[in-house]
Length: 535
Image (tube, rainbow, N blue to C red):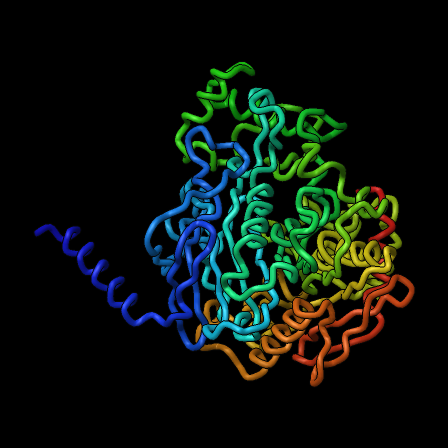
């Protein structure tokens, strides 16, 4: 007997044995059919549940379609495949082989079903809209579910599979939304949750979206999207980035300095030898192997007057996203729910390194060049005693520009609508990381604390202080999901944010909690003046 056949038999026997020992609470019936999960240390998990048809073949670049049903029991023991992307060392190298067939979600819940429906928390991963996946070990939902939460994570299309426009696509099924396929996947997952989460003991009327980096940007996109209205009831945006950058590109109309999304699609097709705007061009694009789409150094619009052109990302399509994000906030046309928002103290996206941001930072003047015409204001706010070196100035002012000030801006827009909003900063630094994190806690560093998956990053280097910070984060975040208020007995009081008081909660470098007026107010005021031009 061949080795592969023997392996299949072993796997089949293992599944049968697991099914025989499963608890009754490990089996749920949803709209599509019956699922069986498995329980570990009091938490039941259900992995790899399809929430849409595989977006392959003719469904590449289509809105997600309703998932198919099944007969019998579907064993939900393994994660579904993550969405198609490049594998990058040190980033997503631990993920399974990616595929276009990737629209799966996962549910964790206490193994004993409560009589009262539990709050639902829905995680949206980051990855610069280019990568990421729900199967990453740092996103394990066990700790969150142990706080009487039903936790859900899901995959959404990324890169050119998730965000792509072309004139031929715009002509096909003209009544369907276009371009933002990754965001459509997120909306489809939220609709699935609304229809099915009660089967897992979750409350479909108490759903909190939360995410970090592009996941935080996705949370804010759901706040902007009329198609997501009513599908969630609270939001937590972590390190979402510069307001308006993610959603500033029009799908079919070039703007000064910003080519349209269709310009990107045409340039990519041309790079692959595909010309024209007709059905044949679209058929040829869909026939390309998936691997042809993951190199983002090729297929960009050739516009010599455009600098810093990104590969693409979310766009204003008129249905999923109808206007620029900054305008939505200032006009108060977003989906109004309670909000938590913030960033880490040294928060910069991975490709941007200290002292060399956007190719500047070689002198003090160049380090603050992006803040024109308020360079001197920023310089005085960040370096009043002239003791900073150029790398420190570039890193700290860049962190404020890219992540910290945008979070405060969004908080102020929610407060202006009299909505409950809580502003945080994560400044905690592990003892073993203090030499490396000399300018502040970096991007993504809080995520392992929030999920209490510290071992997935630090192995055995987890101290009692680290664990205490993780426990506090878990309590604040899950309290907010339950009631819209992060506070409870035993925690430092986290006051609501208002623009007049500028109150913040900060997880300090030594592991303690600061609650009070934002110590960075002067610096963020200076950055905010320059940011007005950006928005």
